[in-house]
Length: 464
Figure 1 (cartoon, one colour):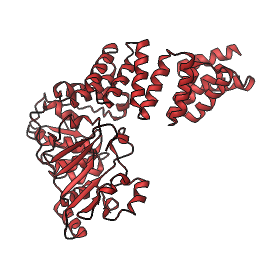
Figure 2: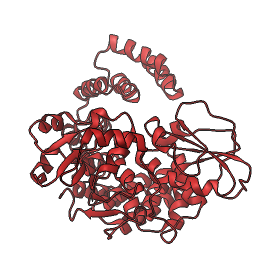
Figure 3: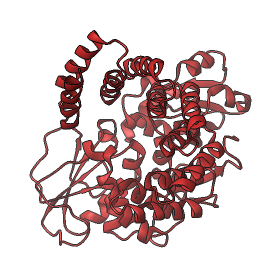
Figure 4: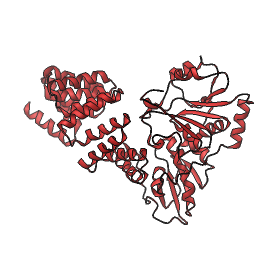
């Protein structure tokens, strides 16, 4: 049996998980409580993201060796991957009761607490881990994330910088440093470090790997064709498509590739010769540039950002919506209280409809400008007189833009509609979380990006 385990571990080490799995199962057929085979099978399941199976196998292994801190930590990770935070915390706690200085368990416990919005507890766990391992790059990075969430950006920045000094090629720390620098208004360093995003593991599937060279402002563009391509969310595209005009002014023919939902709206963007939806066949081009690299190319800083409008609704579409909404007898106010549930910061930026219904009065006409509603909000909408939902009739952002044009005011959380309204020059009130996205900076009620925007900031985390 020992020889079979040795062979299985060797296959596992080589990455041949399928063959290793067969041998582990053969061992368990003969010895159902074989600890190493159970642990390794669980590890394979976790690697494949079969977390339910991993939990079962880790628990079986613990019946044989209940005080194995490594398995307790791995069980916590599998539970955390399933969203079972409280159970994960219990498993990490058991490991730390046995070995209080177990860095991996301290870090993972901190991560679980952070996901539960218990950021102070998370920070304490990271600090304890750093007492044991002061130069642990991943812990320093996570500590920075917690500090930033607590509204301590300067300390967060120092923690990120210490992280990449300990591990110079640590892309996540460089990326977080960039976000912090941009938030603090240090655009010179921030845009440079923002390029580290392409080395993050999470972004590897977004790399385009074009054979044409990347343009970052150095090569002349006269007579050349350049592809500007969206890379992140809808709001990012709406915010940074503004620089297409500056690229065209360098003598380039600009091809803009964006999310399909934005294609119709951006057909009229100044400076663009051709707008394509992502997935459409690309024409020949000489250079390419991701939209969020344009600020680096143009050396954008707080002194040269224009807050002037650059997007407009299509007149025919606007007339159709004007006919549908009818004559305006009261001020029209557009509302957006939540964004995509898939956004990593959605828990901080979004509200529930029931939180804002007390503010809806009969002295204005209120319209929901969201395309999608969460189930609870859709149910609450039926009991909210005075609020009209239009999203089911929005085909794409050209509809949203037409309706925004007809509003007297837009009130929104940090979503793509905030960027749309700002880019159109519509008066927009933006509700921001205590620790805001970098683009909204700190300590100001205006935005250099949008002259028509007014910012309202939480005074404490979660306090709307």
